[in-house]
Length: 142
Image (cartoon, rainbow, N blue to C red):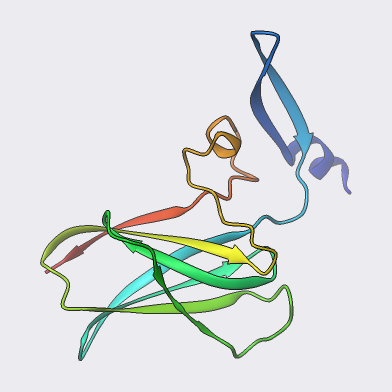
């Protein structure tokens, strides 16, 4: 690891020890399980959400639109290497006009679920290097 990486690639998080808040600094480790919705496009049947998942062997990806239920995305199986990025999509037929939120979460083959942004593991981090919380995109359908 270079001097720059050793000094700058760190995670700083708040931790509670005996009722006191202390700051813990650790070096950035391996990539963490992550997914993100990249784009929403219009098609003949409505819209399609496309994104990527990475950081661990990916079993599946789920999407939530607004406050609805988690729905399974379809993973494109063009690259089958264990740690390869997985491109995924979800068809979204006839969305209502207006503002919407689209959130994705990846699930690894070991059953690990990408955490929500309010998960204590993520919420107390003060650096972005290892923030692998669920990504929510805001979109407008016209």
